Length: 365
Image (cartoon, rainbow, N blue to C red; front, top):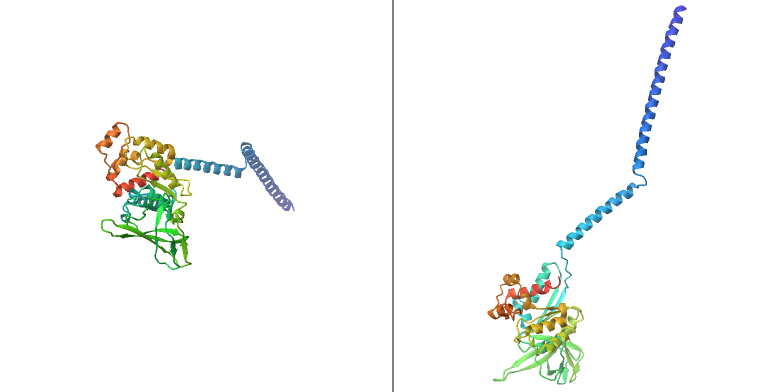
C-alpha cells in the first residue's frame, strides 16, 4: 500500500513537471508571436508612412508615361536633327522646248531623272515630259491650251476613224504649226467635241515645202461638224490639270521682253489647277542686264523661281556634274554677276539633266 502511494506521487510529479513545461512553451510561443506581429506592424506602419497616399498602379503608370515622354522626346529630337522628312508631290508636268525634251529616247531628259530619283526614295510618281524641240513660247502655249488654235475651214468629221483635213490659225490670226519639227507623230486633241489625233504631213514642193494637217477620231460615233472659229483643244489641257507644272522657257528672257516673258509663264501656270508651280531660268541670255531680269522673275514668282545659272555657281555642284565656266562667265562672277552659262556644257548630257532634276527636288526641302 505504501509502495502504491509512492508510485502515485512520482507519477503526479512527472505529470505536473510536463504540464509546467507545456505551459512555459506556450508562454514563450505567445511572446514570440506577439513580438513578430509587433515587428510586422512596425514595418507596415513605416511603409505606409513613407508611401502615404500613393497608388502603386498610378506610380507605375506615371513611370511608364515618363519613360514614353522621354523616349518620344529623344525620338523627336533625332527626327528633327537627323531625318529631314520632305513631302514631295507625286505628279509633275514639265513644259518647255529642247531643254525639257532633250533625248527622251535615251532617258536623258530631266523629267526622267526626276522620276528615277523619286522612285529611289520609294515615292510613286508620274513625271510627264511636254517638251518640244525647236518650238517657241507661243507654240508651247498652244500645245498646252494656253494659246488658242482656231479652225479656219469647215471640218466634216466622219462617223468612222478616217482622215479629215484641218486648217487653223492662232488666236492672233497668225499661222501656227505644231508638230512641224516632225519629232512627234501626232498630238491628242478635241475638234468639234470629238477626241482624236492631229497629224502633220510634209508636202515636198521644190524649195518651198509646206505642211498639211489631218484629224482622225479615236472611236466610231456620230458624224460631227467643226465650224470655222471653233477651238482645237489639246487633251493635255485637261489630262494633267492637277499636276504640278514645271515651266522652262528660253526665248524672250531680256529686259525688253521681260513683261511678255512673265505673261507667257503666267498663262501656262494658270492652265493648271494645282496652286504650286516651278519656273526655271534660261541658261543664257544676250541681254547685258540679265541680272535685272532675274530680279523681275523673283519679284513676280518668289520662291517658285529657280535660277539654274545661280545654282551652277556652287563649286560642289560644278565639280560633281563636271561643269566648266567660260572666261566670260568667270569675268561676270568677278564683277558680282551671275554668269550666262552657255548650256552647250550640258544641254545634251545625262549629267546636265541629272543636275536640273536634283536642283528641282532640292527646292522642296
